[in-house]
Length: 373
Image (cartoon, rainbow, N blue to C red):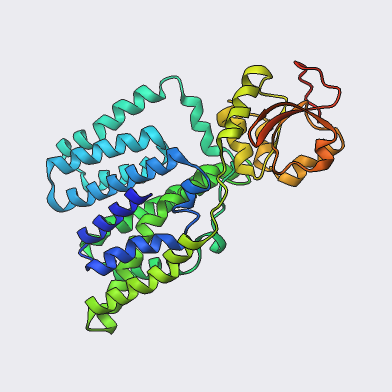
């Protein structure tokens, strides 16, 4: 996330933002901590975090190319675009559309910029077309709203859209943000039409949208300062300092959140997959994201299955209930720090991995895989 933030600073300077406002663009990202650093420090979305850096880097390369039309900048764009696709493919859509709009009728940049992506996409997608159904599914993901995004960044972004509408240097960033929103709306419509409660890929687009939003918000601060005040440099440093105190300081001093994943649960999941199986396992863990990660990434269950509807609605307290009444599945991966005494007294611990354990219902013989509920 730090590298992505550095790219935002470089993009701000490319858009001719004064130094304090380019710094402010980075600071503004801390107004959405759950989408900025929380995506990695709490949710552990490693692939997404890496892809965000590549996507923001590709956006920076596009801005450079739009200004200079240099071959090296379009090559960098192609490299970052392929890297984005290979780590989190859903982020490439807005970047491709922006580039196609900029490079229309210039075949050489088109071939250099899009050609490598076409080749890698064809190779990667061969035999994996079924993965496209993920755009229609629900998933454990943060739901956008004022409680997660706040109100200040959206308001400043809207002001930035208005005051920068006639700024040629800002047009690429404006179009980029609008295309992210358009793709999110399209994915939302597809997923909800298929019954998804939390359209996973649609909501994931917010994790990328905060970056152009922060740049446009910084543009808004710059333009308003130019209109209202004369001493822009001094005012800019004051604004950056205020943002630093109000946005970054709380994020740095907030209690450290418990990550979604940890090595103990990972070890328990790997052992379960090798020795018990994938289908007769419950998850007695702290939140839906952890259950989602265990079920899909560690145990390797298919995304398109009836069980996923249960995982998408996961509630820690509801998950514990059947184990108190001995109606759970045969086995469970449990966080021992959260396991209530009512469950501990009714189960047998099969294997312990630090603060995690594999447990089984009383009377279940090792190797039995009764689905329970």
